[in-house]
Length: 418
Image 1 (tube, helix red, strand yellow):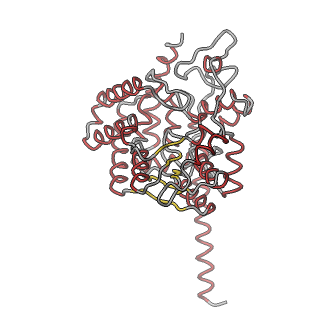
Image 2: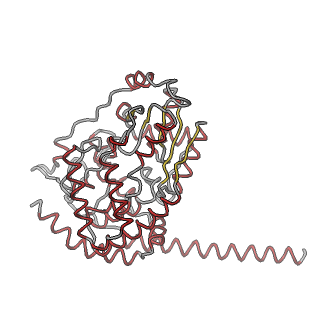
Image 3: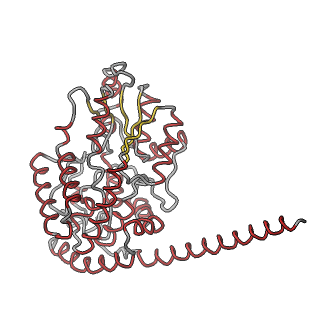
């Protein structure tokens, strides 16, 4: 055996040894972190769903059933037959495409695109607005799904906008750590995408596409509207995630006041982003062109979790993330931290609300929902480590702030319910 080959083999073995040590070190670190962040689940929960006593607006009757279960009305959709009739109005009406279908790489937008193309036979163009918060799994699934369906795909990406958004997120989160608020977790970490719908409709108008199927609120599944995120402010959306005009003005005022209360937010770029995002997000109808209509896919097609997940996986090769059992939110890079903050502060996050809705709808039993929820909502440590590095903070710094704030917050929340 030549000396060169021996040296090559030796070098290869050394690299494998170092890789194994690094992998073991990372695995051990993750296991230690998981023990440190797993919250105790000693909160009182509804006996019918799994919402805890810290959920905004919740009340329990003598049988331990919450008001959300007592007042629940089953999801109603307009139906696929009606959807087909409506879509017929837009066939062959565009310059090149019948409709725009936004795709984020998540399970629901992938299923909507699949159905619109394969089941309803629309000539669709897939469109992604990249605000800098798409997770690696999102990029991978966007490419996989659009190629599997053979549809054209358009990226709307502004590098200057993304750079500013990332800088502002870092400023906002550092400000939040100095004065945390349960009311501003989402605006702090997810403000950059609030102009997404405006950009989608602008593209459709400029390219003479008569219909948009999907978007931020348009077309989201009823099962994925989170009432608690503004509920801590005392403002709740309807089951489609929509707010009344009065509530929109109220939210603008309340979020603005939250912003002003924290002097560490006082940066012009942050203020400008907040103002622009809030205006577009809450008053997006003013930005729509009269020649572009919008339809909510899930207003017509009933969202069934098993059907959605099995279809995108089996038919399109869609995949989840390696660090979670969940199939929801794997496309959004901000949500591992958003979910982590809520879980550490109030003992639940969006998965508790999501599975509670599935229970009420009869898609899953309470015992199965609780088991899956506890698994799906577990902190995604590898993703969190990456996020903390990008925000230039440590997990220890964040946890110290959360522990102190939680000690003040929880007694206030629980006191209001006694």
